[in-house]
Image (cartoon, rainbow, N blue to C red; front, side, top):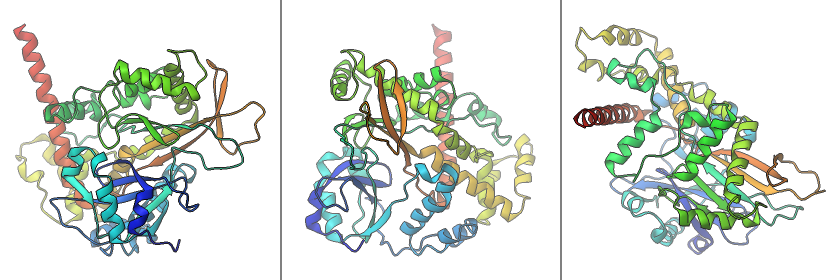
Length: 445
């Protein structure tokens, strides 16, 4: 695409949301190249240094680690490395049908600065304090807006979409988990992280959602998971009607769904779900649950997540092998520690084996952080053949076209391994302390 986005184009891009790394903008203009598209615009920490797109794609060690993927290794910039990672790694693992790598398009600094200023008042204040649009980038990622269906011959009055962050769908069994952290084998990472977030004041209450239910393969448990997400959306559940958010938070956590919010949502579903008042929300949640259960969408996600079979408590040792540095974790262990010998075995493996463990951990980390976007539109009786999958909702006697995509497939940098280890220890430590405190209180009572 030859077009370069300029400052005056910024008014046609509106705030859709954001994560830790990117801002998402939806197109509101009429240009045919952009209708039905969104931009992912890179952010930069306010306390960090800005950098240009010309930054090398991968570090020397990362190029060695990803050597099996020639396009990724030869990517000239970090942005192109991100694109190649999605195109050549995640597409092959999750299936190209459900992954959209997008394309990078050039932008001016003035476009980025204008966008940053335009969306300021719509962003959560804590996001504003933490990061801004990186004005030194020279390109942004253009992808399809998966909350909508492409314009076509069919009459498309209404489209409703749900965005779900499934998180990690299994309990780790790794032999490298320390005995004091054994609770990881019985309590999900998501549940433990909720306790830390509550302690830090990042959330107001614990989520009702359990990822193990969503990944269970049981119809009843999948429905329980969707109900939990609806009751406590946080940043894990959002619903869009014709591309506009009607449930969940724009750039951060949403509070528990109150009666008032629930009533507004129930009313908004009138144009899509043909049910009596008070039943539309339940029917919509049934539709999501049935689609996830019958499609098997999460089966591949779980497979990719399980590439992490060493857990971070094992992978961190392989990481120190890769960077050829003394292991900071082993340095803190006493010679008598039961795990010391087990960890020693990790430090005796080949460099290729170490790189494989770390590479698989980072790929799995992407799969644990991705989002899934499922869009529905009602099918009219006798409508023309559709290229999309179909799901029926018996309770309303309706049929829907649906399409599903995995998004937020960010390449995790090698240097994040130490952060992942420290966060893991913090999450487990906080949860163990919370359990102890609760037990002490129960004894007092």
